[in-house]
Image (cartoon, rainbow, N blue to C red):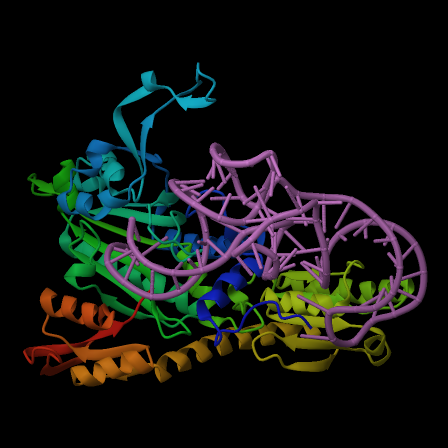
Length: 491
RNA sequence: CGGGGUGUAGCACAGUCCGGUAGUGUACCUGGUUUGGGACCAGGGGGUCGUAGGUUCGAAUCCUGCCACCCCGACCA
């Protein structure tokens, strides 16, 4: 049997790239740093979108859409924001092409230069806050709770399918509030929504925390994040939620009249997750045989493969399958009956394994005789025969089991790869030999953080939320610290 | 963007050093036998050798620029 993808042990990063391509998720495009998301990959993203969208609406948000292009002057209105994004912006300077007189083909028409250049949005705070200025006059207009599903462009130096691409798909929530407390609570609420989504749907355990000053979003007062651990021991930031304070309100002059009749600046938040979640999903669960998808996000939850010799046999199988399929569909389970006669069963087994379909059912002559069928689990590779009667309930309970098994496995891996370091030497040794999450004391300064980053390549992933107060000494400087922070090498 | 590597059929590669009619495996098409873990036999189609120039009677092969991808850095969600 030809091996479809290299193993994780051989070359983790090659494994990832090959898996993404061979499983039909995405491929590189003719445009530098941009990917083509293929139908199977996109259908997983759609499942993520659908669920997140429900969760956003349930927390009172509405969808809207703002322009792809942002006038250059907008970007520079918030000082930190410009600094953060200026280096990676794509810029539109002209609006017309023409045929060159000297036969050089299509050229940019120099007469069609834009008065003001347009930036292809790297994120939409500026254009959205410029709009909010007109939408908000009174406390009665608040809170304003908006989300947008969009593509953004950040001109990255080094790109990788899903993990870092020049163009990526995401959602960005942008909310405006009358009080600081309300904005902070919105920021935290959305962080919880992300953590819930990651754990319940992606089967991905995450750590919630707040970023250190140097890792903060450009223009935010506080950046909250969820951090997940990948199988190679590196951390991946899976979502961020920013408390913007009044920074953008100041920059775009967004004021409202409060209940007391006084004018005040609006408080803001923004929050987002991107197609990077696809990368997290792939790297967290998959194995050397291919993808392993949590049932809650699998586009196909059950695939049924007939095994037959003659047409009549297939017909007989198809009749049985039809019944099972209909009742599964009525339970909300997605089923594919792959009765193509252009591929052999063995080929199909390997194919759906590569694509991470949680349950595979094989049904052939043996089963017709005995009234059974064979179910194979993708997560454990376990194969077992079950009576055909009442199989729908069995399938439903297996899907639930798989979902929690995948989560538990990831949770166990995270626990096994989470350490505490008390000295800098210990810290370095852990990162060198094992990777993973390392909790250690830090004195809270940017200098120490930078020194650690330079010397070990590890960064502070977050200062974890929750009451794990513990007085100690910074492992580098020995200065006092009140709590351990989370370090890791990161994507 | 700096260092290293690689671009030859859909995919994986050989051929490049030493210039002389573009190959192998797989995938694809046709026919037959097969079908409970990526089938077998026979026949067939497909490549301006990443791209743009240059050297040469002649370039996949030598020289130069550019582009893309991979690994290691810097940057980053």
